[in-house]
Length: 137
Image 1 (cartoon, rainbow, N blue to C red):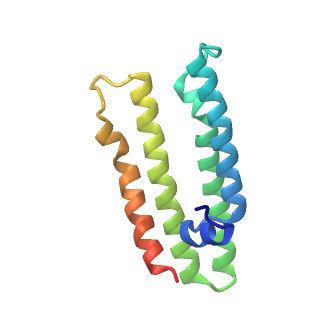
Image 2 (cartoon, one colour):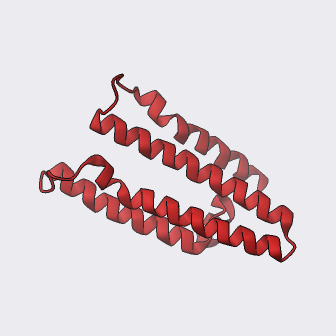
Image 3 (cartoon, rainbow, N blue to C red):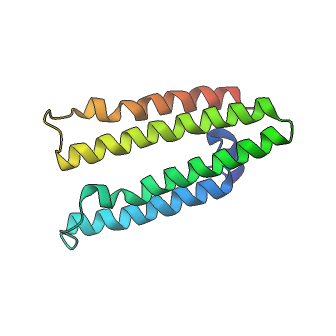
């Protein structure tokens, strides 16, 4: 069962533009990942493969800051703070997961990272989304 755009916007809290931005970054990263796995792009590091996702996180953070400032100026202070807190929490958990995954794939750390540690931001993110889905009508 696929979710409608209205449901995704309501549950995730992202604007449709941000969802499009994240989907485009995921598509670009998938293409780079396929090239890296096939061996066609041997010069690419894992950080370069995940660069579209990092860029989408940065652009989403910038967009969220702009929307929050506009909401604050319009007098919707509570909504602005709640939206800013929610989106920054989601984006920071996503960023930490991507960063830990890049470190694991590149093995740049002195201590090997376990997959439980790498997946822990995703587990927290899923729990937060589950709580939010129960609160939304």
